[in-house]
Amino acid sequence: MAAAPVFVPVEEYLRTSYSPDAEYIDGQLVERESTMGENEHSAWQKALVVWFEMQAAKAGIRVRPELRVQVDAYAFLIPDVTLLDRSRPAEPIATHPPIAVIEVLSPGDSLKRLMKKGERYEKMGIRTILVLDPDGPAYRFREGKLEPLAERAFTLEGSEARFDLDEIAKLVD
Image 1 (cartoon, rainbow, N blue to C red):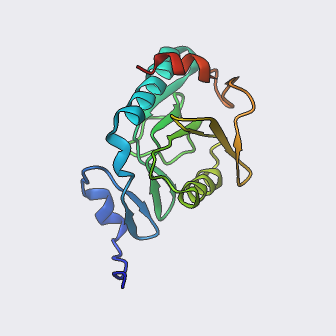
Image 2 (cartoon, rainbow, N blue to C red):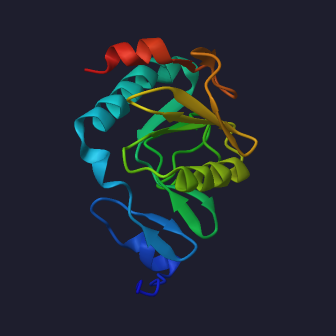
């Protein structure tokens, strides 16, 4: 028999440190995938940060790995990489829609959980939601659907930042 869910007040979540950091959804702590610390996931996350950091000043973005994003009053998600609009003031937790969020899939990720995250990101107003599979294709979450990425290179809406999957893949070591 499954244990009853334990509800945590949002104030407690915000003042508590978790190792690894946990997401917060509707009063519950949600552990992130245990494989996040594995080489392939980490290598892709680093490659994304390096790629976008090279463009940051010129493209008007801030690049943040594993930044808490408050997608609504009772949900804080932690994308693998978040791209913020540099013209906005820096915040401890992102409360304005980022330019883009990127999730790197782990073997234990479930499609159901990924779709729910995508829906929350979209409701917040994030226009570019990307999902990269280290062992396969890349996807874009748009209008409630996860679709294979049609273009491997494009400019992110709302910025001068450029996404180029082939160039990012060259940075993975």
